[in-house]
Image (cartoon, rainbow, N blue to C red; front, side, top):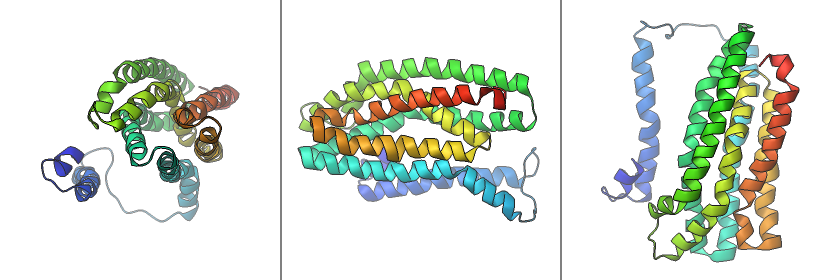
Length: 264
């Protein structure tokens, strides 16, 4: 819809805004229609406000809030850094990289969102057998997906960049060169995203929030500010792989430490 509104309709940045609105409106309407029918397991009903439950839910979901805030902050830092180093072409190049990252990471995001209710249900139901099975399936899926997405980004990165920039442009050259380094982040991103979603599903909002804060505001933002000062433009692309690589180790430690407590 971005392409339809911006290019064929010629609406420019206003088209991107329309796309965002329609993107949220369509699933909202579909959800309202489906759940209002009251024929499925889930449906709308009257309920009493339980402030303790609402407060716990808000705290448990704070890691997602941190992640959303960090996306805005790190995007700003990326843009400012690239503007200082390469000007407008640098900003355009990092925008291409960020769009491409989101495109490739949707597989991880979708899986983590889909598996989280299952993890939460099995934990609440004390079904250790299914919990272990779900965790085992998740680890195999993430390992396979990580290798696949890394291969696609490493060998097909230049083709992805071509979707956004002409091959003869300076923007293409900057983005294509950076994509080679940036691609290594996809080896680690899947496990890190799954770990954060998993602890949210297990009602351990404290661990999930600390994990999310360290990953984004700590390592990623710090890398964006520090690495270019030491090594210049080439190391801008290293900020994400370095941050995700460190968090990959932290994720593994967290998962091993809490394995017996949550029976996965």
